[in-house]
Length: 258
Image: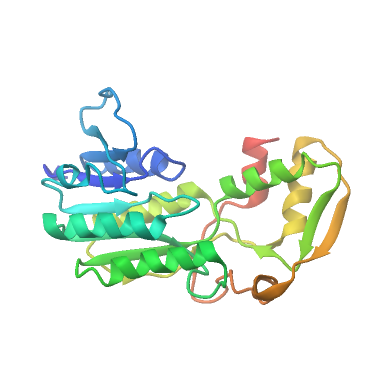
């Protein structure tokens, strides 16, 4: 295996997904430069470098891209992902990046909700950048659903909007797919990656409560408006032509909670 001398730049390399991606890239022989909001001390692995960058303002991004051919964009938050992606794309264009790999979410182009629209705007920054690109839309991670279930379970009565369905996927399986795409040539929009099972929100919450040994009454509710209609129609799902992972919500809970 030939070890490349140019680092692969990874945004969001310290997050849930990045913590799985970085070791896989290193195992494949890639040097990794991780963008972090704060400076970090050197790590034991000489093939991993941390660079302090604020993607929302663009501060520090230009020098971070020096000598980089491939960028894997994993960073995301509750707001501003389109602006952060715009700053990254602008700097990557100036740096002559040859491959930009971007993670997005299933439903970015169908869900009438602000956060999904922001993800679609971020996608457009990538697709209209002029940089050869690869994009993977994934379902919500098990980790995110677990956080949601934990917060809901703190209530004495858990409200469960009816009609909400999810197809959660394991973040490790998403990481493996992203690394495969990063090591390959630019491929455009690839098939979505979702979990193996579609669950109602109530089923997900009940599964968590059972794994954690808790009991809570569930209160069915109806989600109004465009968002409710979109969820009831399954616009956040990818039921055809999608790749599916193998690890179920139940297996995830058995490992993390049970």
